[in-house]
Length: 336
Image 1 (cartoon, rainbow, N blue to C red):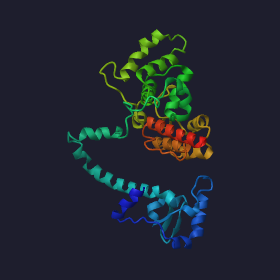
Image 2: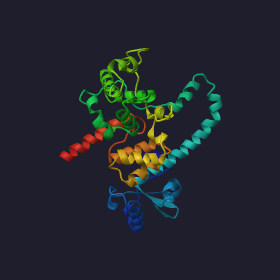
Image 3: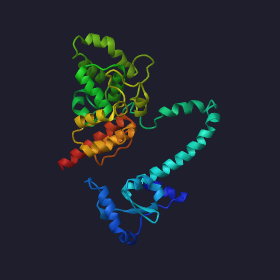
Image 4: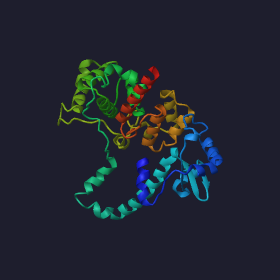
């Protein structure tokens, strides 16, 4: 956000904190607005530590509509905790303008054999880490015997759903197997770990023997690790591929939970699997139910308050890695 504030200086947008004297002139009004909007937020910064920015009210229409800022003479006084709204407004304005330009040139550009194929792939583009060949140490790699303890705490909801189904049914249908298997691979599972883990779980189902498991499922596991077929070493699925991929039907458990479940189902899932979340947390998450990746990120932020959420909502393994760091940090702080 600080970088954005600097960059916008050249665009004619002056975003600087108000002086202490100006803040004192409208202190009571600012205090009234800030106290009201944070009355349920125990972690809100103290009023005395706040910086305030004066901007055109049209730059923060969302905040004005929700009465989250003080407005005087066409200017809105925005606390630094809400600066992201300015960024959001400016980004949307620039994006809308450039999309209009792009729309006019699209018919011509898409015919170019050099650019056309790239445009077709943009919908599923992902530029973050692929969590393929892991460089993590053996001590950081997830072990098969630890999955049951780790899943309810550190897995995103989409992978908790697969894990829960596996423990209940001792079986996963094809798409869920692919999704969960590659996720575990990104968590540090070796091919031997995957064969051992899934064989142990699948063989708990009546009629499934080790020989039957090897015959039906071991090839696909070996294939995922580049040991069969065309020898491609597959990477875990990112959120865009999961959301836009084959949707679950008839009791299947793969896919993005925030995409495939309605609000009532999600509320029940969050209450059952995230017992530490209160009603306000769940409502905050479900506000973005129609934006699955944003809702997923909000779920992480409320589950691990204060933790870095880089790439969370973009990749299931990003959630796991960030949750692991947050959990380790909180454990160290508790013991010190």
